Structure formats: C-alpha cells, structure tokens
Image (cartoon, rainbow, N blue to C red; front, side, top):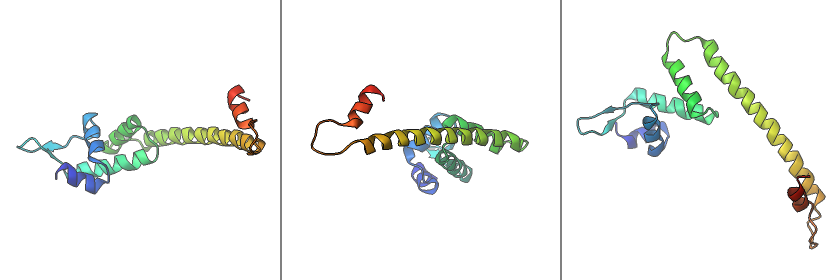
Length: 129
C-alpha cells in the first residue's frame, strides 16, 4: 500500500511516517517504480510507535521497545525496566507541575485584579519570589 493508505490505516501523518523511515524505525519495501510499499507488518509497527509515543516514550525509547518487541527471545524484565523508568519520569514531571501550579495559584490569589497598577504576579515573576 502507498503512504496515503498507510497514513490512514495507522492514524499517523505521512510526514511522521517518512520521518520514522528516515531514522530507521520502519523500512518499507520499494516497488519497481521506487515508491514505498507498506506491508501489514509496517502498519502494525506504525501503530505500535503511535501508541508508544502517546504514552510519552521518546523516539529512542520507542526504538528500544520496538527492538524488544521484535526479539522473541527478549526478557520481559528489559521491557519493564524501560516502562518503570518512564513511569518515574512521569511522576517527577507531575511533581514539578504540581509545584508550578501551587506557585502560580499563590500569585493569582495574591493579585487583586483591579484597576491599580501594583500586581503581585508581576512582582513575583520579576524577583523570583
């Protein structure tokens, strides 16, 4: 199938599919005319990549996961290690975002939001306080 059909079936834009090919995540066959010819296995890999990226895995982590997926002698512990590392990263980001939210919430509550020029939000941003 051509890239348009692959895009439709995988749910990924053609540009993303070309990028994944450029970086070696997928390797579709080429027809006699030189056009890409995507097989069902390529579509499966594209969907795998889409789900992996949707869960926050980096391109390099996706490469590792795809290699493990294709390695039938893999140890599931290797896959779990990657997933646990990602989970810890997500937890760290959630903590950071929670702190950002508390800080901004404090600044918003300190601001009267009236016609006066003094603004605790701007003061907090300017002095880091």
